[in-house]
Structures are given as structure tokens and as C-alpha cells.
Image 1 (cartoon, rainbow, N blue to C red):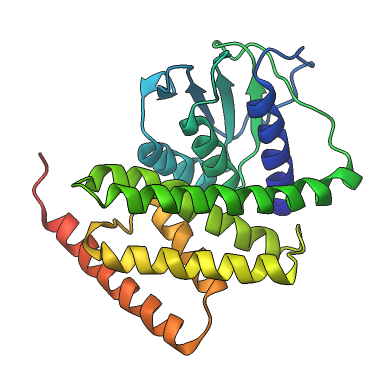
Image 2: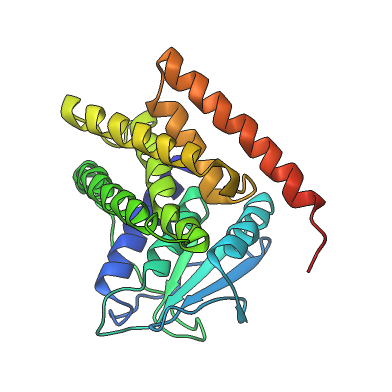
Length: 256
């Protein structure tokens, strides 16, 4: 059931996000009255709200964690736009899928309808095969962005830009370990190289990463999947030790 929900979430959301929210709605799916509902909205200007309040990807992650523990459901709305899809929409989608949460997509800001496409089993393997190739290109692009940011002082920008890198590593290992995609030997080699470069980058800026963030947690899962040589394991352990120290320092800081 968990894997099926993950499939439904990823494929439906990709279709929804890439196609926009103006599709003709289907009748609303039945929702269990026992679980809580979390209303997530992404607007054309990049704003994100959770239950009507302004939010960030980090706080959305915490809300989704709690929702997952309560076996709730996400109601999701994205404002239609003629421009490119806001990056935060894709990150929100990945977070929902990462927590294996059921989701109801809406084309209206008051969540009064539900939209979605039919899922055909023959198309799933092809969809995930395309997804891992897309994620690889996506991750490489953001790694280049991260390196470019090193030319100046941009700690905050680094923390934002690394989110898709870490989440894509986590999703790739999820696809592979659950048999949702079969990487070619070349893809496996490329993902291992990307993982090694990501670890290099995280060690270079080791003091900046907050292990309480869901993207950091997911990234570590991905790194441990792809990096298995003794030297890689040693470096991963080194990073994990630093993350423990970072968490201690963060908890010791007084609240602003």
C-alpha cells in the first residue's frame, strides 16, 4: 500500500504540475474522515502556504512529518501561470511523495474540486525511467550552481540551492531499491559520481548543514546508497559526525 501511494503521488503530481491546474476536474475522491487534512497551496509568484499561513519548504517538511504520523492526507493547489512552474512547487511535490502521503489535487484555491489522471500500469516503468534521467540532469545543473555560488558569500543561497540535489539523490535510491526503475550501468556510474561530488561539496561546507532538515536527511540516505567504498563510508561517517555537532550548536543557540 505504501509503494502504491508513492506511485500515485509522484505520477499524479508530475502530471498535475507540468500540465497546470486548469484541467477539467473529475469528481472528488472519497477521503477518510478519520485522518487530518493539510491544505498546501503554491502560487505563481512562488509563495507557499500551509493551511492558509505563509510557509517555507523546511516548515512544510515538518508539517508533513506530523501528518504522516497521523495518517492524514494532503490537499494541494497550484495557481495556474503562463510562466515557468515555480521551483518551490516541485520541491513541495517531492516532499509529499517522500513521506508517502495520499494527496488530493485541486484546481481551485478553496479546494472545492479534485483533479487527476488515470494511472496505467504499463506506463509506470517508463515514467520512472524518464524520471531518473531527468533527476540526474537536474542534480548536475544544481551542482554547477552551487559551485558558482562559491565565488561569493552566499551561505543562505547554498542551503536553498542544495535542496533539489539532496532530494533527487534520495528519490533515485528510492526508485532503485524498490524496483521502480532499472538504471543502466552508465546511469549507475553517473549517479555514483554525482553522489561523490555532492559529498565533496557537503564536506567543504560542513558547518552549514542542519541535520533536522528533511532534505539533508534524505540526501544522507541517497549518499549512503550510492557510496559504498571504504573511503566513501569513512567520509560519510565524517560528515555524519559533523552533522551531530551542527545539531548541538543549533539547539544551543537562543531563540531570536
